[in-house]
Image 1 (tube, rainbow, N blue to C red):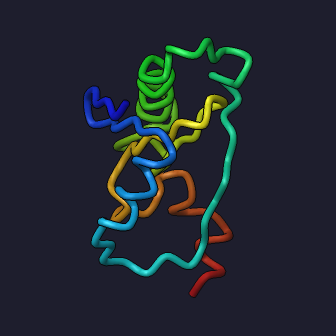
Image 2 (image 1 turned 180 degrees about the vertical axis):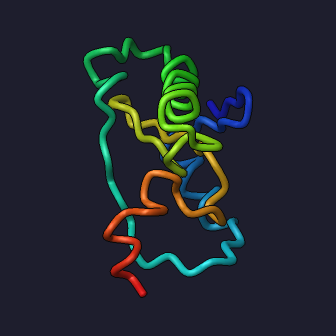
Length: 105
């Protein structure tokens, strides 16, 4: 099932489980943020538009928020698939300047 498009990797939970164990993460992770998107939301998900949704999120974060990339490292979908959106070695853009990030130190 594993599929790739652009820089995104889409996997089922078994593939993701193996993928995450094989990662060499070279930063300390002290906070996991589970965040939802306003748009696209789960009601926009049709079972086959994973990559379209990811590209939409990345475009919004880049054009509207002026971030260099999509905010989140990982995205989960209603069908249980997981997408890798950016390296786990990069702090999620969505929390880089958040109060949670400041309070971690």
